[in-house]
Image (tube, rainbow, N blue to C red; front, side):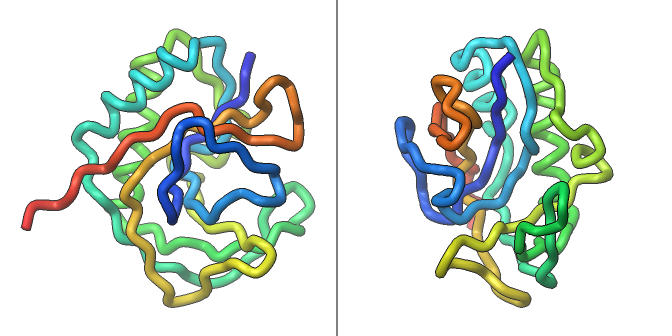
Length: 164
């Protein structure tokens, strides 16, 4: 099975973009890491269908925290509002409905346990009170070519603009 994640990058990504785990562009994870045997095309189709009705989401950053198994990863938590919860729920439901198999790596962080955040990156970070607008989703391969330190963007899609 392959490992994937669905993120909302804070700056647009393109299919084919690659980066190391240390150089992830700033992003909000919308669907935490999951395993699937489905093809990239199948996952991309399910994701496109799920995002077709999702609007752009504006988020507000909350307090800093430490995430990860050893609580050593500095992040800025995102204030969980109804729009962000609905986006997460719609994406997860769309992937589950569209794929024969989807297994969350850490089920406790999906659904009610979902905690959106932006991981701090070297000289880049967002802090409490900062805002960001999520306009795009990206499907990312967490181990392209079984290379544990790399990430690769496999599909991207827009969130639809809100009516004026």
